[in-house]
Image (tube, helix red, strand yellow):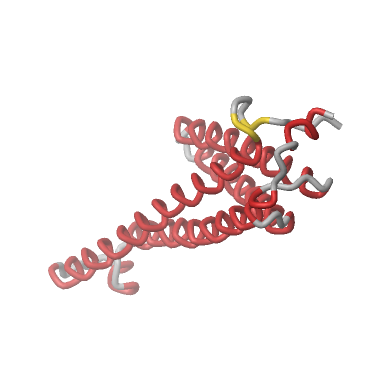
Length: 179
């Protein structure tokens, strides 16, 4: 079977996977902090809005808030939960690469597959809602993410074959990959 020796055709695969882990940690940390800040700001605004208006809308009267605010909260909480999970699995990927533990690398790969499926479902929902341009952007993002998952899976397979990465890596890795 043919194994890729470089990530994105320019960086060694173990360094590329480490960059993928650090990059996903940073990106999902930004998502988590942003969604948490938006939740807090929206909650404060909702309290001020509730105190200042006497609405006759039955939905606002029953639930104490507007239906659009609830849908925004659901989206923000979902993004927050997925971002925290992605941060956790990014840390597992980094530990797996550094300590040469293929099971931790596989856990990131499995989470990535689940995330990709959710991204594709989100693309379909956006396409159904006539937001084709946002759907196209998410589809392109998911294609790049699939490539990164292929790189992570390649590292996992190389670890299973006995190749060493991380702290215990040998200098002859490039020669072994070419054989």
